[in-house]
Length: 171
Ligand SMILES: Cc1cc2nc3c(=O)[nH]c(=O)nc-3n(C[C@H](O)[C@H](O)[C@H](O)COP(=O)(O)O)c2cc1C
Image (cartoon, rainbow, N blue to C red; front, side, top):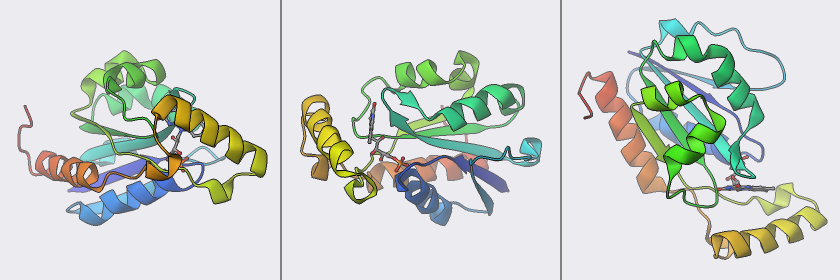
């Protein structure tokens, strides 16, 4: 069984989440980070495709939105799992996914999960750090230091992905 994990990450949190998922999946796993250059990946050669992106200002990152838009027809032909990394636990994850990805892709995905997030302040300049602390406190109503990657949600996500790979119906 072959799994492809495609992710994009600005400050490294989604990269870490992708690695945690990679370490708990069965079979052969390829991990691709979306960067400047367009990637030529044979998506149809995988049994499961996992896409992960962080949220910024209410949207998933542009590189991932573009990747999904450009590959939507092929993505609809493979089992698909989507994960989102962000500071605010999305009560309505589906709504946020639909704001960034085509509806058909969101509806096609068998697994959709919010896996927590982190603020990496050491990656930010002083002004941005102050601004982000203020917004995080107002919007998430939590101390930014309390925002964490959700290990349990990651374990559940990987468990469901492994079931999909084993051919178990998740319904
Ligand atoms: C400027 C800025 C805007 C953000 N906007 C959102 C947002 O709209 N929703 C959310 O849940 N998290 C938001 N976050 C939190 C990030 O999604 C979180 O820090 C995530 O872990 C970053 O992942 P990355 O390191 O993979 O880029 C924001 C963070 C920053 C710095």
